Amino acid sequence: MSASEVKTEAVYRSEPQVQDGGYRPAVILQVLPELDAGGVERGTVDIARAIMNGGGKALVASQGGRLERELGRFGAKHFELPLKSKNLLTMRKNVDALVKLIKEEGVDIIHARSRAPAWSAYFAARKCGIPFVTTFHGTYSGYTNPFKRRYNAIMTKGDQVIAISQHIAKHINTYYKVEADRLNLVPRGTNVDLFNPENVSQERLIALSNLWRLNGEEYVIMLPGRITRWKGHSFLIKALPAVLESLGHRRVRCLIVGSDQGRTGYRDEILQSTKKLGLEDIVHIVDHCADMPAAYMLADVVACPSIEPEAFGRIPSEAQAMGRPVVSTAHGGAMETVLPGETGWLVTPDEVEQLSRALVQVLSMTPEKRAALAAKGRQHVIDNYSLEQMAAKTLAVYDKALKHGRRAAA
Image (tube, rainbow, N blue to C red; front, top):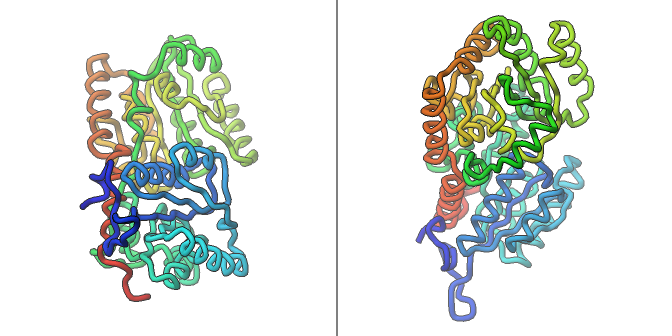
């Protein structure tokens, strides 16, 4: 019986334990550093919900954060542990704390989503004789350094290993090597109900337009995401003068939507670049937005000009779900999520002229072409990158781990 298909019955163990005359639901413990905003954190909450919906019991251990409350809304339990720490003594204490938690809660699988907590979870799983699952969320820095690669390699020690994209699966096999029967491709999921143009009211659009002082007559180029150098803000800004020249009289606004998370130095660099190019009235940093579905609706094109490969990249997926064309750099996860000429455009990293041409091409599309692209983009995400897809594939990995148990310690 597959966990992904179960709604009203229990998710069963491979060796079921009789309890009160029936089978005990599987108990899955996910561990990560904290539960503030981010792709890892959001995915943890989404999978906890899927476990509960499938009849299992979802537990999460972390240092806590603003998403902690959301777990409680659907019955998942959170346990606060200092799992963000890389202090060896703290990590050793976390092993004991996790062993205690596993025994008290009857945990069947421990699923690690980050390196520091993964080291503690690995030893706790081995002490308790339960399967250890990992999700490889990124390339992780220092992978060319033998010592750092050894630290990163804990993410390949899972009885089952999840890669969030083909790009990451290839990276794992290039630098770490994982047997095919342990490596599972589970792309990140997008909430296609939340990111649905039909579910965004006019009131929300008007409120955000007023906040950002948009009048509806300008072209809006949007770059969402954290304000950090590798996201490629400077790459986009350099492309804008040629875009303005090509479009002539039509006014353009470039909105940078995201928090600098304390990176004030880089934020100042962006502002200096816009001033140097005479773009102060064009480029605006609007900081964090709590209503991204409405934000996407205000964009004529969503730019993802990262200068380093994204492990997956949620922005292209969300934008396409909202029917918005995407212009992204041709590396990393975007090579999988964007269909060139059908749902967006891919350009060579740091090729300013290519980026300018792609943006002009998108902004010059006919309404008919834009409508066809919007429909294709949304269906592409529904078919391949929905939350339901991610949940079903993750629960299938849990089924696999329960069926095969733990492998011999590597």
